[in-house]
Length: 173
Image 1 (tube, rainbow, N blue to C red):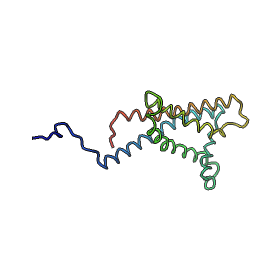
Image 2: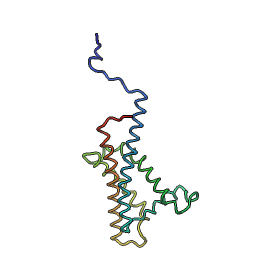
Image 3: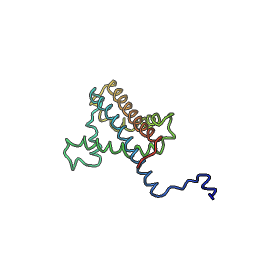
Image 4: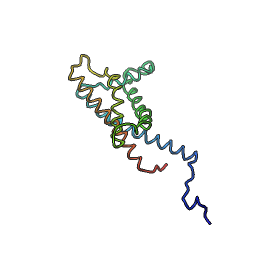
């Protein structure tokens, strides 16, 4: 004879192990989304460098902020700064996106990601203005703003697309 719970298909609450697996899975999804988004963003920034409106050497300022210029040669600071930037794009920003995405405009996660990218861009466009060439013209400044905005839309799109992809699938961890 079966109980009422068995007949209704009662589901057992998740265990601590289930929670840990879900947290690790969510972290991996966020890191993957951040990596994809940052890769797309980097392509746009490289185009900006090719047309002379962005200098990838500006990533050195990130390494200098935490005084890595005292430990490493100047020639390596841009690469170190970029990897710090990549780490942030794979950790902090995906975590924030996961926390606020339901409040952002957009019908899909990838579109909400583009809204998120726009918010991030407002800080980036000012913080990385040193990437502009000296005595930049209005055209150069406008192209800088446009390329960096496009880069952030690509970041958000890639981040949201990965979240969207995994939202409809069961994790196999």
